[in-house]
Length: 259
Length: 255
Image 1: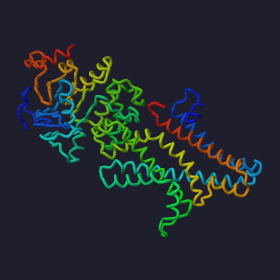
Image 2 (image 1 turned 135 degrees about the horizontal axis):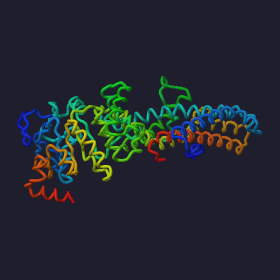
Image 3 (image 1 turned 180 degrees about the vertical axis):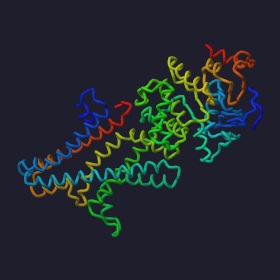
């Protein structure tokens, strides 16, 4: 599906133009989808129609969870990747420990831990707990993707930058990072799509997101087929639109025309 | 340091002095007691068989490789672990690589103007104007807004030369600048090098292009098994070569 919208544009359009158009259409699609979702569902027969507002609200919460924890996870991923490659052993150990713990334990346990097991003075709302746990979890996976990307940048790039007199930090910021993040983009996209689906685990601590809405409506109406079909279709629509946007970003960064 | 140059009889203070430079990669002893000097305005051409240490030696001159022992002094600054020394030297010594190493995510103009903007803090408009001037000098004005992958190898290498010149180096190091190019493109890069030599740039060039060495070189350095086996003026090196091994090398490379 990544090609999807990108293939719709006239052949003559430049890469940037196609990418911008795709992002605009997909973002617009996302907004429209959220705006009309409530009305669309309201027109559906029982048990969806009477609960349309709840589904719409749940969809918003799911999207909020994904966007906030996604941004947080990218920031954490970059920091952890850089720390993991640092020349200072303690930084490497801390980053390695973080990645080991968060990739080696179930996300559900992480969410429960953040919500219930943090000391009282640190306690935060269910939504914040879910965002924090999801962000830390995806951050650990992002870190490995970004590290692999950074390490795939040829050594000659660093040598050229250093021999031009750029300092190590400038070499990283202007030369290595922009190329490494581009290589890391496909796995990062996958991580964000997974994140959208994994946000349903926030259900466990009572965040009223999309899956939780489905569960609640089912508990009061006992009609699993229409309810969970609707829930799944909404998730599918969201992941499809997200893939379009990230595909467009990838296409824009693909200066060498490899995709 | 102001000893007499062995070949040209020069009394000037050398720009680069290397004394008994040694370098090992694990068990391989790739540089053995290399001692030589490079003078301002001179074109030194470094030749020798593959694996003779000539590229490694060139790379020690701006510390892309650390030497294990010996001394290297560039423009009065000793190369050691002092980072400020290193930054000072890298601003003054440009380097051009066999594989070009252009920044693929930047345009040609971006490649050439990046270092002046970030290292010398040249204002963007000025850096751009200077970059365009350099691109004109290497004949690539119309490609300024392309990305490196849209250019031929020869064009990419000319961009790399312009990028290096943008830092206004006092000396340029060329590490086999034409070895990755097909014959059609070698000439266009060598022409740029000849132009630079004529303009008085101090150059050290590792190459297999013997006609270039003979025509442009002020001095030929021959490396063999990590040693600087011979330093000679081009005439003496090519036409009156006494050393059997070097004669064999020259005979081999000519065909």
